Amino acid sequence: MTRALAVLIIVLAGCGRRLTGLISPGDLGPRLTTPEGRELSLIVEGDARGLGALSGWLVEVRGARAFGAVRVADWSIVSGPADLPAYVGRLERRGLMWGLTDRSTGAFVVFEGWPELPVGALVAVEGWIDGPHRVHVVAVTVLRPPDGAGG
Image: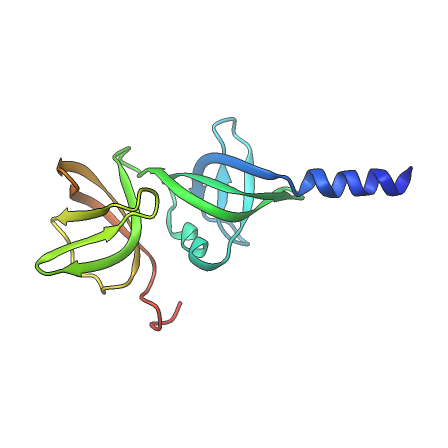
């Protein structure tokens, strides 16, 4: 009976979860505070390491729960600190246009009011919609530098 209980606990602890909340910095990495006020540590790898730079952004994380933490398998931004639409992707330049292919929708979004940032950097952008696939940038956060540039 004890062995079956141990297996059940391990299985339940590792079940997939979808959680929404605000990101904040933590001693051991980013933390997620849910609307109910629960704080969870996030275990991040790959592009999810950029979540630590999104303090105050509302995000949705998907992953396995393990002993009070969530191992992030996938994530998306719900909105930025100004409660405007947000987009995440690697910065691209197409001719005279700057933008990114949004990782949530797969659409290329063109930016107005773009600051100088390195092509290929993983960025989170918040802004208002200024036309079809055009966004006027209000805030931008670099989550990871371009591949091969460290980080």
